[in-house]
Image (tube, rainbow, N blue to C red):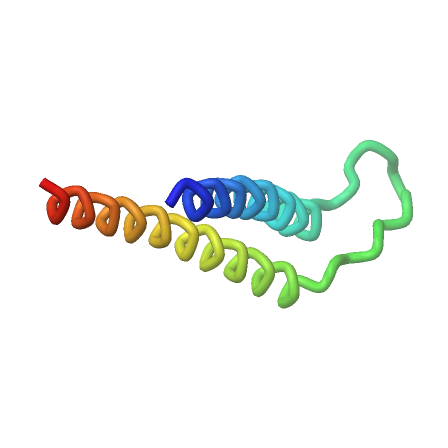
Length: 83
């Protein structure tokens, strides 16, 4: 059971990092350079891809959280059977 929890917690951590990266990409895509006049704009990211990546990361996080909840329920049910 511990292996399931370890894998799920690792997945939550990875999904959190991806969400932060994806959110940063979205913010950077919508910002404009304001420090230097007439500076060439950085190439805009693919907004559609950034939004899809963020949603995928969100679903990944939710799936790992659900796995943890399910493992806890299973462990509780097993303990109830043993007693």
